[in-house]
Image (cartoon, rainbow, N blue to C red; front, side):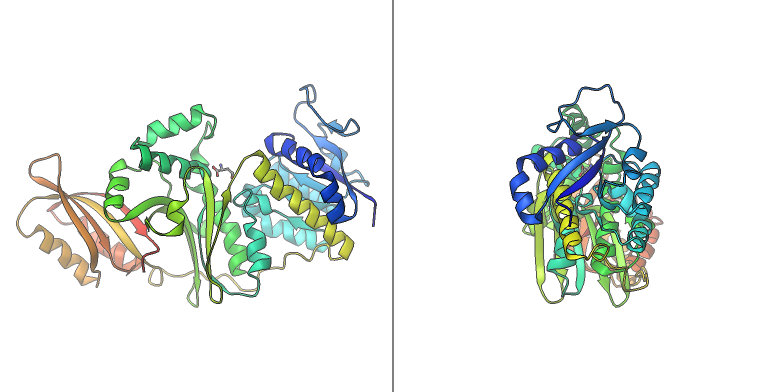
Length: 431
Ligand code: HSE
């Protein structure tokens, strides 16, 4: 075993500099845990003329990735630069040259995780990506190691900090979606282009990674039903509260004998559910296993040091596995073929908000349609609406299959007494 492990770092943004600082600040403890020194030999940057504050004068900066992928002295490539296709090309070249990979890139792993795993296993290299899901929360290790003896049935995650921040502000301060989003962007907290966060894609990528590992199944991003929080109304947040629920963007991954179902959507959760108290930009993943029952993992989902902590822990794992001679064995290929649940097997409660005509028999017409599909109601609130001849109706159903709900919903549209169906959300955690 070498006395010094050489690292090539791809990217020197916020997380990249965090990695360098943690390696320096925790040098002795890392040396104690791994039995060797870690040296950042080369760093790939976009702009060589930008002044940098590197602690080690011997670290070389380059704008040529081949200085890393083709350097025989470099043992591990740490990727914190983001991007998909070009980054994949660089990492594949590094793997073919025998380098171990640590990446924080959920976009890349969600899309090309299987290809990366195949290449690393073929080359007897390690691939770790703890930072790709929920930043500083060691959730992948919890699933792969801590809960490896169990059968995971369900995972529910608040895995996007930006949307959780927006929903928390809306709920606590009564500010509407557009105003909070603008404020979060001005603070530099939300991206200038918030599409991936707000429309649920970022969370869907993380749920894809969690589902592959948790259910040992080759799930793809395309298998995830995605609905974001854009335009979510304050009314729904307020009515949900009155009904005893919070509204969160929840990734739900569910697995039973009938297959798996994975979705990311605004979801009502009982106010006393542990995920309801996860506020601001924090993340949490709730995991239910057959044997262990309920568990929950909470922490910062992004940020310089939380993310860098996960990256450096992966680097330590690579070194430990080098010492043990187990490189390339940390992850195994999925055990089960992909099997997704049908809409008949996907069962949840639903929340609806409608505008209806205030006329005799309206409720009867409405409940008749639901009764036809065996859907009964758990809670109903009726309120005055802006127009004198209308009422606003909020309802929470009991458990219903997606297929039956869709059929009932289609028929609702044909009722002349219904002016509009304003919102439909999933309800979790209360049955
Ligand atoms: N944009 C992500 C979030 C950050 O808001 O959670 C890290 O994935």
